[in-house]
Length: 232
Ligand code: GLP
Picture 1 (cartoon, rainbow, N blue to C red):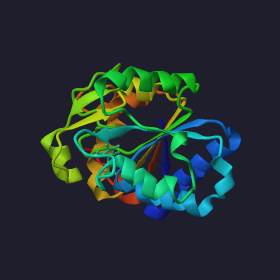
Picture 2 (cartoon, rainbow, N blue to C red):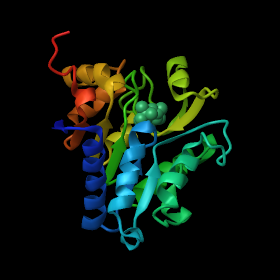
Picture 3 (spheres, protein in one colour):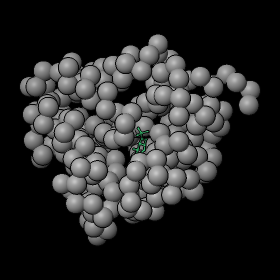
Picture 4 (cartoon, rainbow, N blue to C red):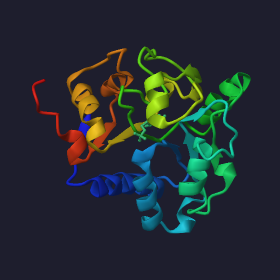
């Protein structure tokens, strides 16, 4: 795991946006895995500022997860989120996006589509305060695949949703990405980042499974990095 310490949240978001842009410029036909959550809002704004619309015509994007029980038009859905922050501002077509299916029988096809496109070249990730990645909550298996998952009450509360299920790429699915970039910003992530830096392969903290990945980059702002060197 490599860590980039930045001087501010804005800088951290820009660093990640530049990594996405570099990936797209170096391999214009690549597959990029996008994440949602508050953490990514600034990344996508920075990406739109840095971008020239014609840069992404051959790209494909896959989404990491989606709530079950919300309509795709619901403002809380991750589909609405990505349409508002990425698809429309960059004038991308819906055909360039792969969304996790909301019916269980289509999940194998979702994973197959990712493989048919050569697999995910770069997966962007945030982290939940309990160490979840995507919606792989504590207790998820390292080799888990895309599936229907139950949300913890803590995650429902933090995300302010009433639905208690989602479809999420599994940890094994995420791990197959050629590169993984995780961004954590803000003091609410300081404790989980301290834990992540000090532990490997802990089933109670799914993000720790990524530490053995050969290209796992963690980008932090000062608030998220604040507890890393504390011996607590
Ligand atoms: C959500 C998403 C994750 C996201 C995480 C952190 O529940 N499923 O993909 O990384 O929680 O969200 P935030 O950036 O809002 O803290």
